[in-house]
Image (tube, rainbow, N blue to C red; front, top):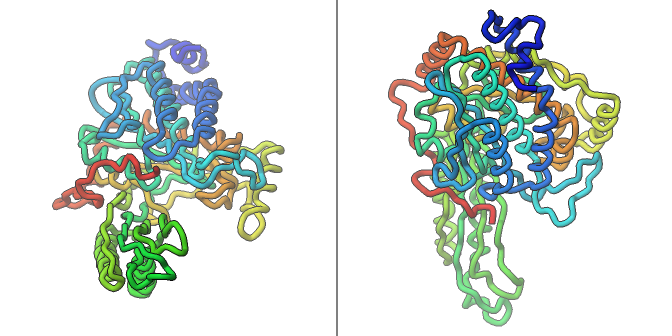
Length: 480
């Protein structure tokens, strides 16, 4: 059934040329999303199975673009120097409302869609952050908004941004840096989670780099004095970074993994690498701690007779909250409501909850509730490249319950649920909320003007955007 036909079928809609209330058109959009949900569930499952990591989301981005093309969007591919990034546009004129769609998986988290630990043999990644749901749900909302624009004749432009490599690749930062959001009035986004909320939240700014030490290989037993261990350089740097933890603000996070430590114990390692993240609610603190971390790397190299260089991989601003937009989104989320579990889903959620730290899930009824509105921004404990977008254009997001309450993020449990009906239900909560929020904004230019005024005030008159990752090109091989 076409969208205009659906409008005519509603008791409150006499004809497209008749008088339609805002609520009746929203009801039509929600019904349309219910009718087409199987299309987007199938998309989300395909992306879940492919589990493509950052900047390698070739099949995932093609699938999202295919659906948008079928719906009548104009597609611009390979934007910002990123082969898997794209912009899909429908409509013309103002306002211009953007929606973001992520699609990348996380390495090391392959998992079947079952309530016990069961890795998928031969697969190296999994959607532990639910970006399969993020991408498909955002496309669902964009298509529904496009159909609403076409059916009602409402002026304006809907634009979906396909944004790769959120997990440590900062895909959106390169898109901001390229000016791809310069003509957008408002940006909407969402993220999978274990609760439903639409508060004006913030996030942690962060920066990462791969520190590569070079030494001199030698026989570790017969001629160790002739060698200079690159691994010693890595370990010395790590020791200094761990000492630094006592002398940084409490909210700062420093974490690392050794990605190369040598090839054999009896060979002094000539090359070693460590991958670092630094996070804080303030990008200024990140910058300060980062400079100290670089000094630690240089000192480690000097003390071990090695050399070091580093490649910045990504850098994200903290989210800039917008209460004006959050209130609109919260109102729509409250109308849409949370996720209602079937008895089978309750059993699944309870069973997988026994595998959580502490041995049980949170109260399952939380998935059906919407958190009360809280105007005080919470920096949370995660980072996102949406942060840079939020400093370029007024931005608002929500969290939808795609996982059972209590599910830890970036876990095999979140991977499993992202491939089940529990994840799909949360995805549709997000799609409906995004679509109805966009309708409100298209119909209320005064709200957009108020959001822009708040945005300007929070950002400050002297703001100048300087990416934390500098002028480097997108690290298209960072997951290889």
